[in-house]
Length: 98
Image (tube, rainbow, N blue to C red; front, side, top):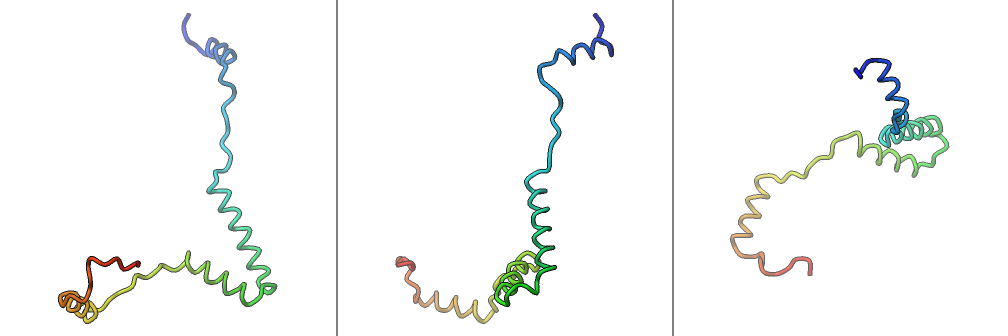
């Protein structure tokens, strides 16, 4: 029996796998929709927030908008730390957490 459109249709009807499942929105997509709703609400109702709440929202959102900077040590500080270390002021055997 050759495999043709008629036999394929019969085989598909006998299949126990069921219909193809359609994928719904992923968790990431759902979270993005939720964030958009919350941000829209905050923008519309920002006058209802207290000053403290506004600052908290501003600081929290700033962490996601602006890149975080790394602390930078200048050449003088690095040279001074090397000098102190070479003089033996740091006890390498002692646990600094105690």
